Length: 114
Image (cartoon, rainbow, N blue to C red):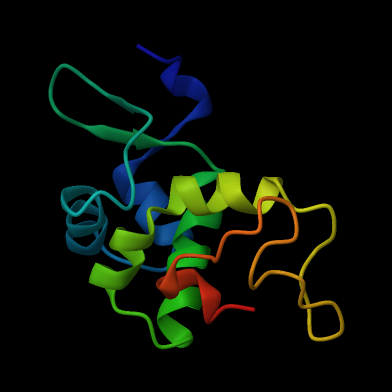
């Protein structure tokens, strides 16, 4: 098991994320968030970096995506896709549709982000 001293217990993590345990368990159930470790007693532990994932989920929701759409977009694959970019997309350099590197279109759920 990952060294839990560096991790946040689910309750502490929920407080930092400004959410509740039920939401975290739901995110886990639909594949949007996974604990870094679980104790033998079933206590979930999260990395501080997972707070960024919660922020990303909320920002995508603010853009109008449902949790189902966010789940379909597979955040990990979206993150990997963004790592391929040579420049950060923005209002003045929207080079993402289609992607200049492979020439492929972004998944429909992601294309609305840029």
